[in-house]
Length: 322
Image 1: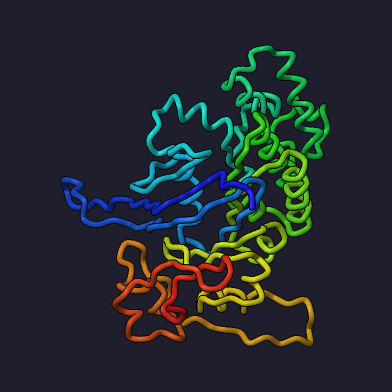
Image 2: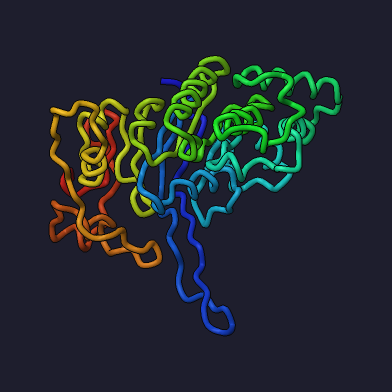
């Protein structure tokens, strides 16, 4: 087992709800509520869950694109929640993000060359000729052509734009890349190209990914381990094969039962969850999933289950396994 490059302990991000004429704080949205996990060097950790469960907020809080409310984030054994903005700027050279929307994340007024060379300039590559060569090299790496550097984002398709976003993330040879649903805005045929590209780049440059997605089949294709989030909390974390063959948490079982199977003769048992996701501004007491859980017991309404190991490297937060 290689060393953890990223350790997240009890990460929380609460957004204040303000109301009334003076804008007083009247409550808070618990977007990320006590999440802990580690990512090992060279690993791809997938994070899945339905919309609004706190996946993207977690990813952005790890890079301090939004400031965490509490908890610690250790990157290469340094707690990045404690460093000042200049130290954080230095650290960002090794930590990059690929955004969800390839249309919104590229500045439409800049050429591709300017978009990709900006991080190089920020982190000290002052020679213009050197930058130009590096940009052309990066474009070739992600499957585009060197002459694309002089074009603008609107001249590219969605898949090509996402490749430009990946090239920008790779510019300074980072160690960790947070992928915030990088293929959800793309066609299925393009998704597989981008996923294969990302897999190849990981092997080529020994990258580590935190891969956020809501599509379980995408996560299965690319990840080594998978964590499942519900209402701001991790409810299960295991090796991908173990998770897909032996899901323990009732929420994970329901998610997996909804994945379409390519074989028309195979009819799996579909688990339909009742009710809607509770509001993160007023989460239920006890286990956050008990209001929709088909196996809920009395203890689930009162006591929050602890996130603990059940079986080899298989973590689950559920009273059924205590």
